[in-house]
Every structure is written in C-alpha cells, then in structure tokens.
Amino acid sequence: MGLDENKLKKIEKKLLAVKEEVINCKKCPLYKSRTYPVIGEGNHLAKIFFVGEAPGFWEDKKGRPFCGAAGKILDELLDSAGLKRSEVYISNILKCRPPNNRDPMPEEIEKCSKYIERQIEAIKPEVICCLGRYSMKFLMEKFGFEKELLPISKIHGTIFRHKSKQKSPIIIPFYHPAVAVYNKKMKEILKRDFLALRKFK
Ligand code: URA
Ligand code: SF4
Image 1 (cartoon, rainbow, N blue to C red):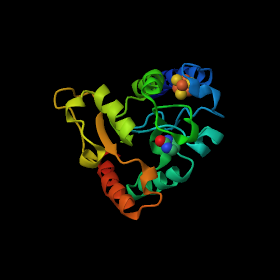
Image 2: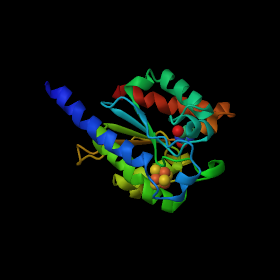
Image 3: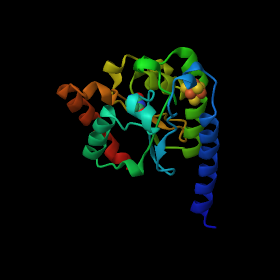
Image 4: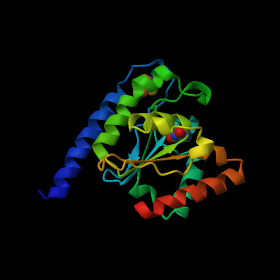
C-alpha cells in the first residue's frame, strides 16, 4: 500500500467512527426532532474545510450539508473562487437541525462540537473557513485566536494565521451564505472574501 493510500485509510477510519457515533447520538435533545443528522461530505484529503452552523430544513430531510437555498449560494461562491465541492470538505458545528432553524444553544455546541473537532483532526486541513458567527466564535477560540475575536462585520474575510504554530490551520471567518439569499450586496461581499481562497487551492 502506498503512503497516500495508507494515509487515506486512516482518515476514513476516523471519519467513519464519527459517522457511526453521530447516527446513534443522543447527547442533546436535538436528536428527537431530526429526520437525518448531517455528518459532512467532501474530499477526505481536502486542504480547505468549511464549517457551517447547523442543518436547515432540506439538510435535515436529505442528510447532506448545504443542499438548500444557502447551499446554492455556497456553490456559487465556490465556483467564483474556482473551487469544486469535490475538492473541499463541508460540515457543521451541530449535526442535527434545531427546530425552526433557531440559533444553536451553548449546551448543544458544547456537546456536539466534539464531532467537528474529530473531523478536523482527521482531515487536518490547511485552512478552515467558518461560515457564520457561531462557527467563527467556536473555531477562533479553539485555535487560539480568541483575542482577535470581533463581530463578524469587522473580521469577515480576514486570514488568521499563527506565525509560530506552523501546523495549526489558518482560520478565515465568512458571513453565513444564508445572509446572501435575498441580499445582493451581501453576496458581493461574500464573493470578494471567497477570492482569498484561490491561493490555497
Ligand atoms: N446552514 C448551515 O449552516 N449548514 C447547512 O448545512 C445548511 C444551512
Ligand atoms: Fe448528538 Fe449533535 Fe445531534 Fe445533539 S446535535 S444529538 S450532540 S449529533
């Protein structure tokens, strides 16, 4: 077995373990109202890992991340940055849909984020793209940028990179694609911010 094949097998094993646990997870009450949990999908060797907030209506019905209106926007943004879904990995902080798409609660993030941490640790991306403020807050705190944390309106599109910790991923916060569903100006801002990803392809 080649080196890459061996590496891929190890990654897949870790991701599969997460998947099996999520399918059976009852750590928070969201499992009761979900249709399907959304585990995540994409390239297991991805350099770029997108982390959204939580499944919405369609994601819950299909068990796939960003397959509704926000997903359409995400596809457009990826396309304008020259990226394909098949080259990146996409998941969320919460794996089960909050009723009526309400905001995630701190206890839910606390319990469920163990899964996204393990997915990141398995894939070891160079860049983590936070989609929305919940993802931004969790990931900037986790990767040591808590002092730089500001409202997303101030730091969207900023590339956070540790000078000393070479192996730590680069973190880039973005507005959540859902904000652009009915707002052209937001879509333009998102498109501009996404252009920064071209250099990480
Ligand atoms: N919004 C998210 O944050 N994640 C999805 O998967 C879909 C919509
Ligand atoms: Fe488990 Fe996360 Fe679903 Fe809660 S949201 S039941 S922690 S998988």
